[in-house]
Image 1: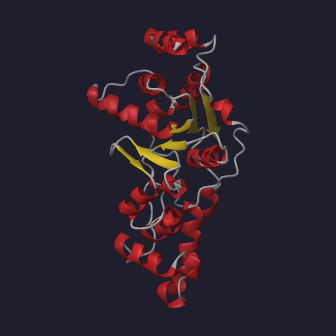
Image 2: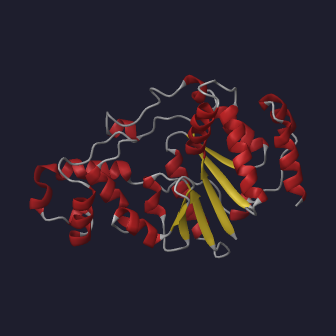
Image 3: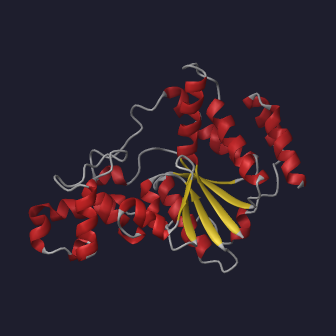
Length: 274
């Protein structure tokens, strides 16, 4: 079986801003939630049987205590922010496993779920649906892959190396050196992507760099590496069969009404028959 792990936060952002462009800036109540649900249903119609969605129930995490400049919820469009929790509730009503992350982030949830699923001998592949470069560190050969809808690419280990110049295991070190603007840490001055890849391929992990390479910037680089390293400690499920989609719950009809889209219930009901 293939286990599909979906970045709910990214999908919500993608749907929100995509629909805003289409509607020329007009706010559509619950429009992003509806878009994500239809997107998940499309995956199910295309054959997905086991799937789970990780979301940021809150934006801040333990990383905000580690680095003052780490990303926060500041600046998120209020109309988008109001759809975070309804998305979680609607997904659960649709019968999809959903993991609202609080102390950890959605990326940590995906990393944890990928590790649990990959341990199951009955799983032939784990597909992590997000373009987020953080998740590239979870890729393992062609067994755990990253699906980038935006680039229309599926990246195994060779794909990660082609994109970043390093193996998946070195992605936290790579991000530590070059920085991650989306997460709010700048990296090490005067070290770009090419230099970072060269250093990591020559010396291995940052901890093994000769002292002269980073000098007094070494501790800062290690802090950024810690920020970029995804946690896999979340016990989200024990058996991958918990992720099998068995159709919408009885409460999904009410959600279709609330969201103003009866097609959601029709698609979910029809997909359950199949």
